[in-house]
Image 1 (cartoon, rainbow, N blue to C red):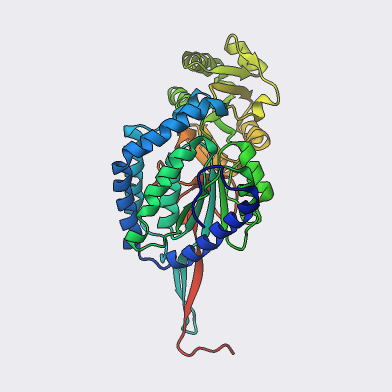
Image 2 (cartoon, rainbow, N blue to C red):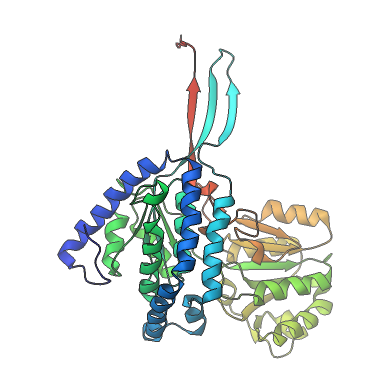
Length: 429
């Protein structure tokens, strides 16, 4: 089926188009699973060069997306994430080179045992198959997702948002042109050629072709995918992340950590949304952190004890403590002890990222045992829950699920395993 310009697929042909995408991806995944690492790395390195050499085309396409962005209701921060420039294009290319340098999880021997009867048992890393990746706005995610999926042996169907359709189309053209030259199947990376929302519904029903769906974007997008998908979904809904300042905290370190967690990039899912402070240090710490957050333009909403120590703080409601602000707003609460902090996180958190600041190793151990989040930080900012920062090289998203991956998901999280059992004429008695 030939590619069509955005939004020109007739409704009566949409189902057939999606079926074709799925079938071709499944066939490509079967071939890609056996491709040697060297061929995948050749594609990544060649694609990096193609993106650099295609900079003018990319910038021209991106200019169309940016010009249309206000009409889609994008705010200044969202338009900034959408915008490409020479520096960001160079970073795109460098990201592909970094993925090429990472170990290949396909074929990795994860366990090896010999049974008493002489059977050799291996647990071997294998690709998941076909990944349907649905995302919004940021065109750099197109290259990241394609790189991670292909390096981990998975075919990928990319469905970006309408806001970045021109940028994504050019990026896909540059990436896909290098596939066959590197010895990879031509359909290993496909882009849904329409922004029609019904296409997502068609693809989410195709469990016979798609093995995993990954939504990356706003809560409404993730809820829709989780509701409609007939295949497993790797996701997180909210990032209601906490920093708890313990009675034994180094308060200078606590101030740095809270400011970084809230202010460095407030629109990310691993930014802190709630500050919990032990009552024993509230009188000393709250005026200092209040001044520091105010200096960074942060609006605070706190409990009555918080309002006693920080002037002009709005009274926090129950809903405030459940809110992922994604902005320079934070809720604050004074707690009696570590147990109350843990209970608050259990009641109001989203199992994403939560941190404790303390010099008491017992308190740290208790916090990390009790807090059921994808990442638990001790004396470090919540902003470190990130694939690159945690040594994965890159990530396709952060999961708060318990199966099959949790936290930042990189190459290894895009694979599963199979058992390879070798005998010498063995038969079971």
